[in-house]
Image 1 (cartoon, rainbow, N blue to C red):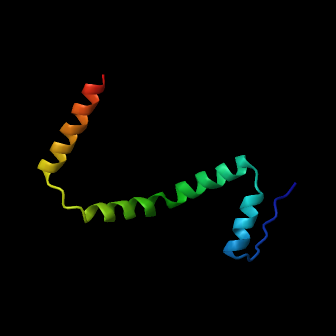
Image 2 (image 1 turned 180 degrees about the horizontal axis):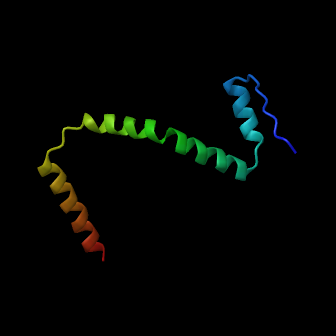
Length: 75
């Protein structure tokens, strides 16, 4: 059996309606594919958002020590 490629034009709303008709396994596969394909963009956006954060090394160290103290107290 030979695979045939078809191109169709659909708008975003139509695409969402098609996805809603998929079963859960197909939706998970779509989500995984989108996650992989958008990783670089999302990572760059995160780095950009973090670059505006003017934390000092002392502030980071203090926060790490606070979290560690809470963890140790919980054990």
